[in-house]
Image: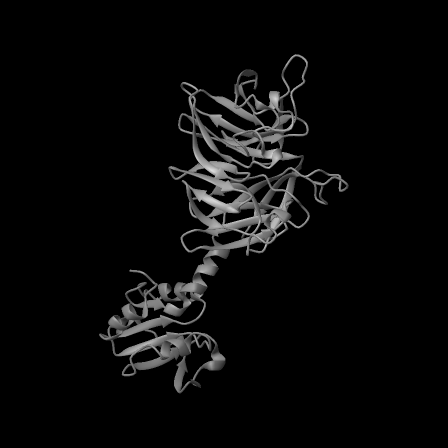
Length: 412
């Protein structure tokens, strides 16, 4: 039985009882329960604070929890009116049954949601692409790197220096794109760099910088790496990371020097490659933000645009059999083609631990685009949202000394 009950459910139980014990003398919660339960009951308040014992609160006697005796409890019920965790353990030790013998005050349920959001948390890895030079527009005091973030303890620790973009985990190793060095770093769970693979693998090594997205196709054991500047996705075998093929997403960058599709992040969905990009037309630098997500069938290279009308999207992910993506400039999380949550800044970096979503936010370099057009205030600092979509609540941990977050990965 559930420890959480509505007042209607609680009062149905209390109709069959003669006594009620309110566990916890709380000025916030005890008085609220008293107003909503039958006045015909024999009522006592129990509390572990000895200073309250044999005194009264609102005309009701306060006694020690020692009075609670499971053997004599047939016509009684307990309602918890204070911080539940320690009280629940105490009642369990006395062999009381959750829901059957006791419940929490219905007024505590919103408080419990906040506490659960604080306590239940996965550690996450966060990548940042910041430059180490503060004179550059995307430089920061902390500089780029890979960070270990502990939401529970509100702690962030840099583990590796570098300018990193997308990260993936394969066979208990982290593969992360370092776009300045044009390499993939291979990192173990103790944050030791065990390998670095060159992405610049042509004879003349003239590939453009801005490697960005990376994913792994288990069926063929291939890595795919996306280049935002060339709109090319390179394919590498997994043993020596040798380039074996490529997918040209668009050839518009060869025609229009200042306009490309700006493909960025990628992921695998079964036998399909999902790609997010700024502009289908290749004109995002000319103000045409016709962004979206396209899938490529890796069996026959056929492609289909599956989500349209996004503004600078990032972080496509396949989570719980659904396609998710961040509509970065519009500040929305999409699951399928529906907006599931909206935020206050430029979004990039998405992960899910089975219960919560973790969403990165970077300093917004395009705030003027929202002037006069959006009532939502723009949050200008970087950090990570921990989001409970079922309750539409979140917590935010700031990364004040960074500008950009690119990716998030659950650390286990």
